[in-house]
Image (cartoon, rainbow, N blue to C red; front, side, top):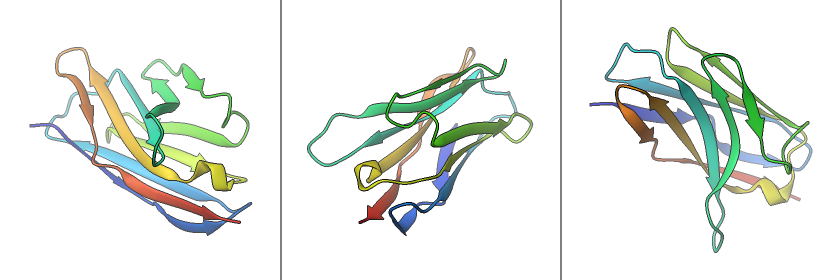
Length: 116
């Protein structure tokens, strides 16, 4: 079955950068859409960024201009380059991917902590 595994999370100082990666396994089909959500303690999960196989992107207002989403369709991998990180970016970041044939799937999450 399809599994999504995230990596690249960690602890950084405000103003620093991190690059998250997420790779889907269990299928060779290219995902139609991949993206990132995040959830901080006591808050609802929110959209961070999405990317379709056609190249369309969507960003949350809070990260636009600081984060960049990209992907390798052949590898079914999505990346999130996070620059100028803020303490407010601290959250568990979840990868998700959607295939027309397989539906929507989620990763287990990776912790990003930004210190001030």
